[in-house]
Length: 251
Image (cartoon, rainbow, N blue to C red; front, top):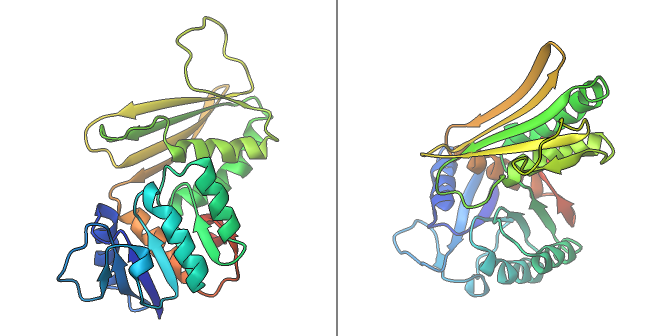
């Protein structure tokens, strides 16, 4: 059994985690921490990490960037592993995360979906075969109209996987509106679509002469991110101090 503290339990993803663990006999929520503390939960709740007195194996964090500093301090002090899912961390916080990982196990990933992280592995193999054969590479991502950033962090992570396989020789291109020229060979183009309630769709397109190979991933609900976070917590429980990502979970 993995005992977790859910940091941000009253948020959208926190509630998703609570629904998922109900049907999972291998994991349970030992406590919750949220600035918007709400009573009526079947576990102790606290308004901030420094007030939490409950011991656990892992913290699953779906909170806000402003709360991450205190979270890392608590995890180091209590020697508790952390699945860090909050996005928007600045360079100082990322450096603090790496520093903390020298003392406790921390998992941070651009996307918690198991499918996306498997896709990253597959793209490396595909790129190493198709790019030298002259295939052009484009990434198209679609998200709901409330999403603020473009392209998505996941799209960039997929592109990074491709670029890593190609020794960083390919350039990311986000806007072609200001140029009139033939498409250069060594670039990865990104297109972002925003509309409605699209949870997340990503297509990585390898376009060659007379054939196209497309890798696609569609998230139909945010549950895929919650399931990934739960798998990450199970993985992280018995790991030594260090910085991990979802590629370690899927092996």
